[in-house]
Each structure stands twice: as C-alpha cells, then as structure tokens.
Length: 355
Image (cartoon, rainbow, N blue to C red; front, side, top):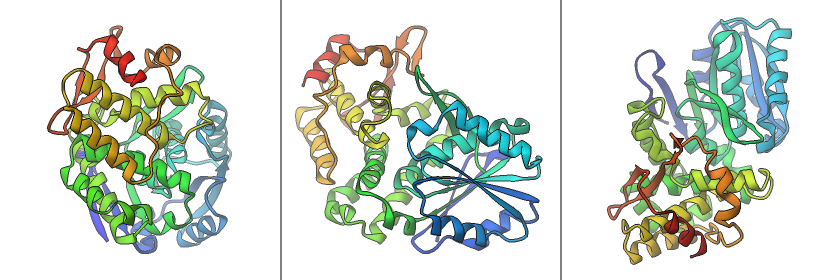
C-alpha cells in the first residue's frame, strides 16, 4: 500500500492507495467510536461492494443512502434528501459520512458534510478511476444548477481517502475511459513521468493492467496533492487543474449532462485548449500532434466537431474562471506545462473549435 498526504495544518489528510482489497484497518482506525455512519452511494455501485463495506465498519450504527447514478444526481433535491436523512437519524458533529462511489457521490456527500451542522467529518472511498485520480482529492465539493456545473459548493477536505484498484474491475468501458481523460490531464499539466508512463504502456492501460493502474493513480495523485496543498482554495496555481474544464463543462451543460461522461467532455476540452495554445504560439505543430496522438493511443475520442463556439459561448462565460468579465483559460506551453492567462484572441478560440 502506498500512502500520500494532501492539505496542511488541521486540514491535512491521508491518502491510501492499494491494488489489493480495501484496507479495513485504516477505515476503522479513523472511524473508531463514531456513533453513527452514513454511507452515501449510488445505483452504479454493485450491492456486493456496499454490503462488504457496511460489514467492514465496526463499532458503529451504519446507514445507507443511495442516489441515482449520473451527473444529474448532483441536484438540490438529492442534497436536501441527504440532509433530511442526517436530521432524521439525529446525526451530530461526532458522526461521519462515507462517500462510496464516483465523483458525483463524492461531490454531493462532501457538500452535505461541509454544510450539515456547519461541517461534519467525511471519508472518500472512490470506486471509479475518475474519482480516484481527481475528485476524491482536493476538497472540492458541489452540486449543479441549471446555469452550470459546480456553481454551488464549498472547499472542504475529507479526513481520509481510501483507494483500491480492485473496484475498477467492474467499471464500464465508458466510465473507465472517463477516468483516463483526467489521467491525461495530469500528464500534460505537470508530470513528465506520468506522460512517459502512458507513452510506453498504452495497451496495458487499455487492458487495465493492475500494476500500471496503481502507478498512474499514484502519479496522478502526487501531482494533484502537490498542487492543492500549495493552493487549497484555487487562488493561484490550483487553477491549472482546470485544463480543458472550461470547454468540457460547457459541453456537458449544453448536452444536459447526458450525452458524454465527464472525462470524455474534459478530453475534448483539453484538445480544444491545446489547439488554442497552438494558435496562440505556445505549442509547435508537432507538439499539438503529440498531444492528440497520446490521447488517441489509449482509446479516447478527440473529435469535437459536433460542438460550436457560438453555441457553447453562453456556458463558457458562466464558468467559474470568469473574473471581472474576463475569461481565464488554462493553456499548455512548449515544455508541456500548464499556465493560466486571460490574454488571448477570441479569433483563436473560434479557430480551435473549427480545426
């Protein structure tokens, strides 16, 4: 088992990564004598996983709250239902929420923990590749509104993150590729070792080789934990983690969060952002080609021709990265390093969408 850490001071937390079964000792060590535990999960998590987790928790009254699978579940309605359950079960600040599922579960369960009684503890146990490498680490919690994704939320760190690659065996191809989209992001923003790992092992990644999976998860989390520890509330360097997200979120909002998985939308967003970087002169043509080829090598789609800037513009300008009416974009430079800027030509955005 590999142990990493994120956060600082009182908000520092442990991240345990294993290619074996969930480390029950770590789970129970933290929960200890907590009076009550609410496992928040969704319809996509197999019942056997949920039963096994419930049986693994000792010395506690354990309850389960299940929401529907999918981005649409990150709603005010489901958020309120979780709060109602916590109230009905008479949860207090000594009790705990366990987020057991993908990014949607982690986001809404974390936001519930952040707001109930002004904050109770929660643990992240992510079961998808996307949530393991991204949303379970960093303390971003949120729900969606019709105007856009993650516009209502809070920065609130978990107390513990437990990651087991064994959960990935039953993941659908669509969900698996969704996670690979975020892995690719880390390879481009600040991790050359991860990029080389992908370049050398595309087929093993496609085939879900357990050893390679553990390595790419570790490298992804090392990158994210380093960044979020430096900048917990996205006031500086943390913004580079949004590479591809401005356009990806716009695609998701435009399609009603139904057509594409989050990772698939972010992958298209990264391709658009990379093309803008090229048209702005930050990348050479062969470097843009390298990015597209690497994404294609692990079976991810790079064709964004169905999405037009004129249609997505209203969603793009609602993005959280708009400040004082100016859009901030994350681009890539010739050293494959991400950076934030609001200095670019709108014509180059339009060219990127049409390229």
